[in-house]
Image 1 (cartoon, rainbow, N blue to C red):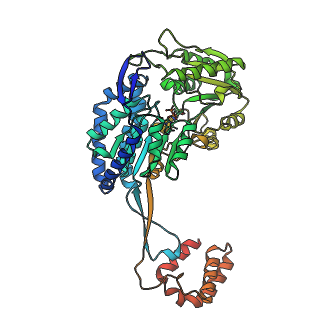
Image 2 (tube, protein in one colour):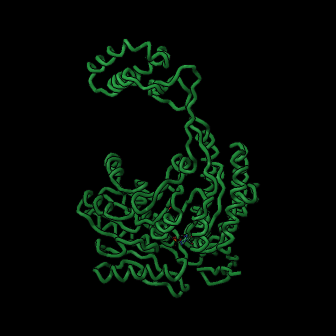
Image 3 (cartoon, rainbow, N blue to C red):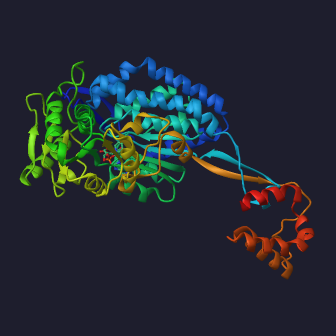
Length: 529
Ligand code: NAD
């Protein structure tokens, strides 16, 4: 059987190995998950909530082990793993326990249609069944854990396929879920790459897919999956807009962190900065000072701010974007070279000034420790340039003018906007996560994310001996009444409506064959208003 041997990107030491799941075994995992789902969907929410509490407890108790494994396998510093990998799933479980219970309760439909008031209608929220969760390597714990916890709470089953670059975290995640008491087959892991991923998403018993990864693979997965519920969390090329009245020291500090966190390997890291000309030079000075201070080193050292990139292909992509920018007139203010003295996969945090739109690093996702800054004449140019991208994940505006920021934020074409910070949406389980344009389809997190994981069912009940108005037999009379009712409901002029109402009066008897006038009249009044 093939295996994946994991070596630390920090120093090449052996971290562990896992067996690759033969692609033909994927179907068995899905079938088992489906069987587990058939029972799980009937488990009351409060029972599911108990297990989620256990899971939260487990994560808390084992946080050091989890963070250290992330540091060794993926390369981010331990403290960073605690902040960005453990906080969000803990917060998500809290969201599910506080809000999810309420949001998933059957809910009455408050129809304003006067001809629906005689009945009781209800929304129910049902799980889909088995979901494929296809995860990336850059946030190998937080991303799938948020998704898995939410799927389990909503009554679904999961087959997780971690990235082949971070399979050990995937195994650990599923082990934690099992230790929390969730049924064994409800959550399973499949190890491998594209063959396993494709076998999984195309299995007919897989009803939903959450794919987090690159745009081209996301599109391919959507094709392979066909007509299934699909959530795609894809790449980004996030812009930050720095206005002339920004608090420059704080802005520089914030952008330095958001550009370099996880060695820049974050879908929503700041990769493009547009700065109003008036503060271009002082902002660059401040950002250069911040980036130059970042301590690059071994992720297990407590004083390391930034670790290595994951693999040679990632380092090469950064180097390529730096070379391209330099060839087109960009100025390297700090960094711009691999740190071979530290190891094969370290690259210096890099700041490039005088960026122009034709540079690769201003167009394609770099996904590494590189941030590029371009001066702009004014805020209008900044907004236009920020939106001039196929991506639309997140963005930020840095200013002290609340009113201006409030008005500008909705003009940015992306799934979330932070003012005087960046990527806040991922850290807020009550918020929402997802992208516009090529950055994705669908949402995770919060209320909108929760409703993506369930199928909404509408149940309408009526108990009467009266027939529905629209039933057979059809007649000229029914035609006339239908006509008058449509005019009454939709005519914009009150005078004309009055005319329709008057002409309907003789038909009241016929209408009350079906409607209770006592209920219908006030409802009709509300509807017309
Ligand atoms: P990737 O697209 O290379 O791989 C993602 C996952 O898909 C992996 O598990 C991989 O094994 C699997 N896969 C590959 N080919 C497949 C196929 N044909 N069928 C099914 N599965 C297949 O992405 P990556 O390099 O792991 O992650 C980096 C990318 O993810 C970046 O573009 C980043 O922006 C994006 N990302 C987005 C978000 C978000 O929330 N929007 C979060 C993290 C990462």
